[in-house]
Length: 143
Image 1 (cartoon, rainbow, N blue to C red):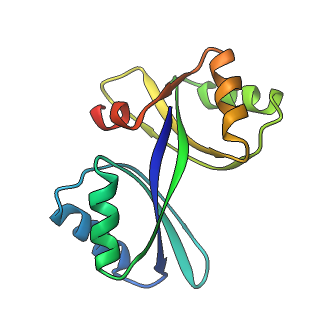
Image 2: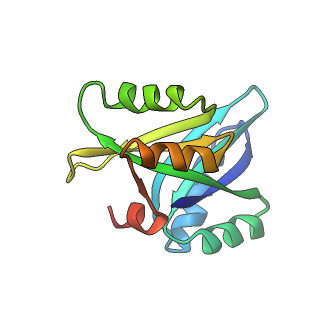
């Protein structure tokens, strides 16, 4: 149920994001979801890809600092209030969201929310108990 996510630390300067995505593309790795967060000096690019090891190796070989973290991919109804509903469930369980991002699959009635929680085990138990579907990395890449 946990999904491996690549985190890449990059300088906050023009062209770095294009460089990273070009490196990944050259290796034939498909990006399924991403998020960029920045500060004045650096950014963190978070990626869900179809071949974590290949992307990680290619990026490291090109001088990037890369980490792998586990996140949860939660399927929610793509309708008004879908996000609010899952966030109320998370609040009810007393879970702390470290960060999140989302994407929508046009061929589905659902959206996918990517979460990193302080307590991943508690999050899995709570979300499953509330009837949410947690996707695997393979399921995300098949969307």
